[in-house]
Image (cartoon, rainbow, N blue to C red; front, side, top):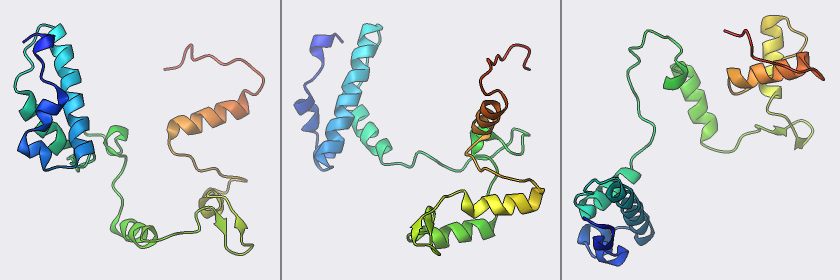
Length: 162
């Protein structure tokens, strides 16, 4: 197939399997398939049945991106596999709070804006005996904040790091 032989967007959208779907989503799927087909043709490959590919693209777009997997890596807390599974009590609490609004960044006692740190910082201080605590999203954020605090005004290098 050559580039000029590619069907028009409207021609692909005539397929009943695409016509019965949301037009915006079908249009996005067809455009994505045609863009990939152009790349494949330029690389010397045959893009195949573009209508079928558009239907598959549309169907896969509606599937959840995150799915459960089995961690058979031997690494208990694997950062690529979503960290550690949550215990049932934590999941139930998330379900309970997540069903509505919460005071994530709202101080109920003063009626003013609060900090999301307030919910865990005091607990972490009690558990660790530390003077202060800060909760971050991941280890990279923690290292960056620690480095910024410890090396303020100085140059840092990763040479010699393992």
